[in-house]
Image (tube, rainbow, N blue to C red; front, side, top):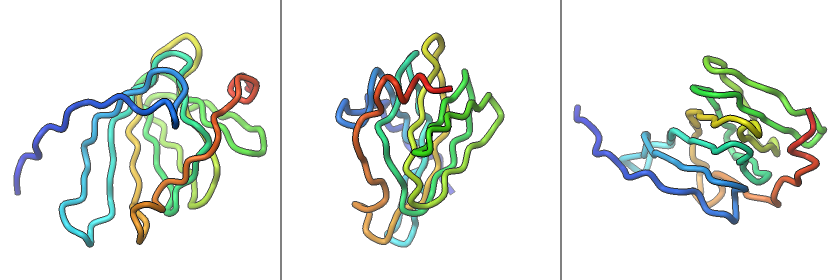
Length: 133
């Protein structure tokens, strides 16, 4: 057993995010057979991910603000602190903050057999798609 070293906060890249989004990695695999990873992600008001999917799905546990999570069928759901959103393997989605408040969530997922396939990043979410709700 050990206390994990603190990994510095990083700002997520503009190729995959609109607005300011920061990540504090908290679960990083130690061995090749470990797949779980996770981090605390903080979105500035109006910030959001690009469309993406995860090979083995993803859990988002909202800890602050209101999370918006959109799907390709046009639905945008709102999740409050204490709620967990699950996106199944391969489901294209996006998540972000409302326009007027920061949002923070824990993002938990398992890596794919090939780590490069864990998350598939797609196009940015348009303002129109973001405003649907």
